[in-house]
Length: 304
Image (cartoon, rainbow, N blue to C red; front, top):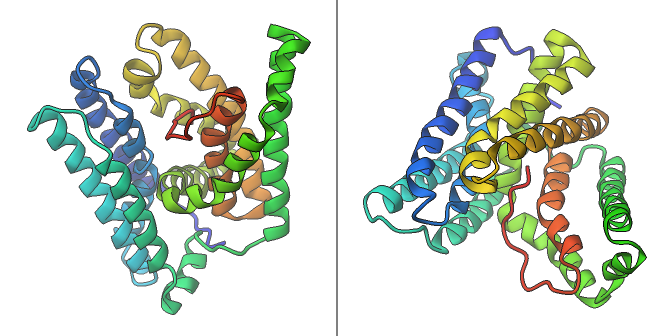
């Protein structure tokens, strides 16, 4: 893994970029949420952490020449255009963003993936924390462990809240369950820029920067707090506008808890794709488990 000692200036630039974008788009969301569905704001927000990393590295003259520029340019292009389309829909055309944003995200994922297939990009991807094949066996084990933990937590919660009868719903319609499980890899590949967007910022950059300053444990905990606060506009205007306090508190607890697990996995695998897949599994697989027997379609969710 290409790991660097990030300076205080670089850490400050990263935080200013991601929170500047988040606050600015959060203000836009505050005008829109009573009029239009705002789930697209949540989708676009997932790009911001990676943008912060890319800007930090692009501003460093020594590192700039070594960067996987094809991938960076593609990612930046689709992020900027997504933000502009979303703002144009809300403030110029005054309408909810349509399915074309989902299609645009899929196109962005495909093109970004194609960019990394160039021979000259592969080594650069490894140098800057984006390599694919590192510690694959451990990565697969941790992904499977996370799926098992999700199922166990769901069974336990159903047992506590609904009794044995509720547990049986987890095992109903097993064909539907397996069908959705089977298509998850394809879904990830078609939308990976969202989940890589968060994890490249949180794990590759911020976790590394905080652990260099505070140590492994404190760095991960503080990252969880920052991660939770970063969700604030979504808590206020998307997740739960009627009960924002509980939504914010719940988000902090979830982000700190997941930061510990994600951070541990990243330290063990040194593979940003592993935690990106786990993040994807959480946001997509949780609805599959919770809605067993009444699944119509797996859609974009933003629990994290």
